[in-house]
Amino acid sequence: MCAIFGSPHATMVEILYDANKERGNFASSIVQLTEYEQHVIKKEGDIDFEKTKLDKKNNYYLGHVQAPTSAQRKWHYDTSHPFETMSWMVFHNGVITNEESIRNRHLSHVLNPVDSALIVNLIQQHMERDESKKPNPIKYIKKALEDLEGSFALSIVDCDTNELYLARVGSALHYNNVGCFSTMPGNNYKEVPEGTILRLNRKTGKFNKVGSFKYTSPFLFI
Image 1 (cartoon, helix red, strand yellow):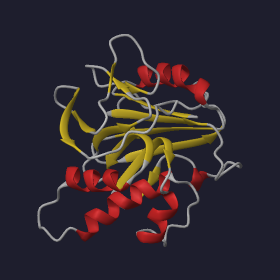
Image 2 (cartoon, one colour; image 1 turned 45 degrees about the vertical axis):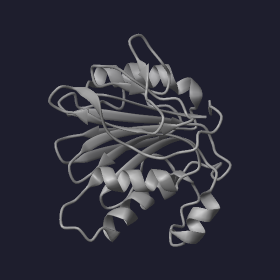
Image 3 (spheres, helix red, strand yellow; image 1 turned 120 degrees about the vertical axis):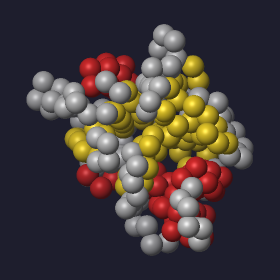
């Protein structure tokens, strides 16, 4: 099991970390977003926020807690969330069931054994293949998600702009009206609709629907 979560406030992301860490303490990570930069913290086991201080002046904070996976039983920085390319960053909770097919058809060059690494590389690939002159991040995300089978709850960062997106199929994911999201539900949280792409509006602090994608919903992956 894994969990993802985020908040525009450092104190709240620490609370969300505690609420979600029961889903796995094999590895933990926090990403702090400035206007255009991403500062990544990855650790084996738990994060002690008395020793690992977050900069409370950052714009947003994302996190992930992870149980060991069948693909990776020993902790390593490169096989822990988030997974990154030149332009994208992805946190994932779930299981991609067509991993082998995606590797064979699209991403044979991606050697990382964790299925989550394929998601961020799919988005990057769709972006690089776009011949239009105007970038369309929502289109790249949509195409990548429609390549996937299985269950996923995702927080996705466009590293060129630090725009934050959420999407899910099967796996649990909840959000509220003050810019927070979490695998574990809480007061005033509602579920992200399957097949919907949400983007955080940095002016209002709310998640808004900006797109949709085709999917086949599996059983709810807990």
